[in-house]
Amino acid sequence: MKKLCLLLFALFCVVATGCDQEYRNHRAERSKPKITVSDGMVTVRRAPAPNLIILPNGHMKVDEIEIPLDASQQALLQNMFGQLQVLRQNTLVDAPHDPDKRAVKIVVPPGMQPIPTDIVTRIPEFKGYTETFDNLMADRR
Image (cartoon, rainbow, N blue to C red; front, top):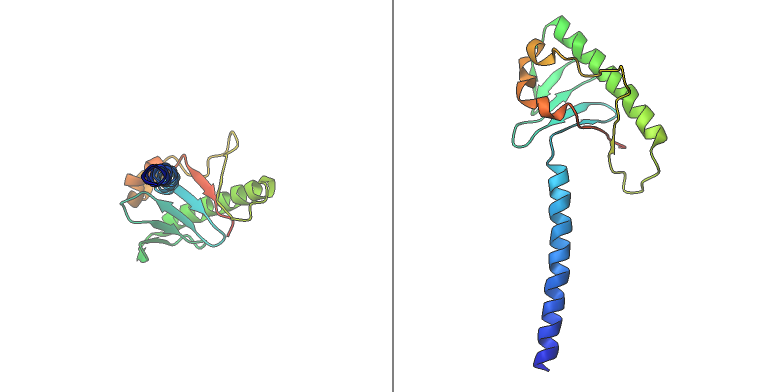
């Protein structure tokens, strides 16, 4: 009886370890720096820094606090938002169906640059977020 209990306990530990690894992989993927393009906004995420939110009208928020921008900065963000939305739509059209509605990686076509190279100099709030520029995700929601 003791051997059976030890065997069951050992089996439980192996299963629990496997589930733990799956959870760790999931958390690692979620915490990667990325830009998520959804229907009504673009979110720039880099833990533990606050999220940057770009709206269709070119306004930008840092953790729900709107940042004052001049007209050229807003135009830059509007243009960026529009290009990212086009990439999102193209990506979602080609993506296979997913009932869990997980985000899909956006592959930027050659010659297109949705994020301007000078965005950090024109909008200083992007300074700590440059590592997110290569990880664009299309949100299905």
